[in-house]
Image (cartoon, rainbow, N blue to C red; front, top):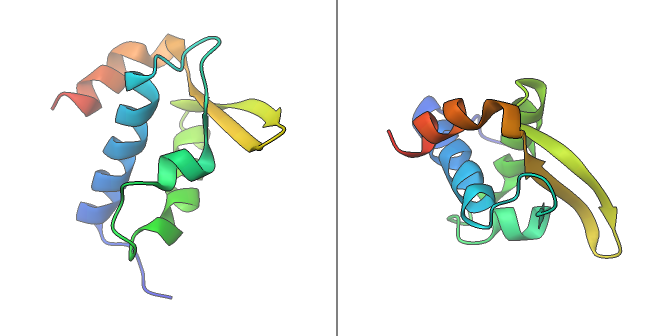
Length: 89
């Protein structure tokens, strides 16, 4: 498997945060992993889990929990200002 370069890492990170932000996935809203992977080029889809794991470690994203369709994620509302800086920069 290839290693993810910084440019593509930032692209995936921004895409994940944008998708969660656009559906207002802060408190009650959430998105499934499959939804977060959709719309990305096929050669980058495999890296979404790694980037998502890093976002969870940094506190930007949290687990919503397990739904009947799979694992779901949401944004950490306490980091909303930092998330908006990443999305709109």
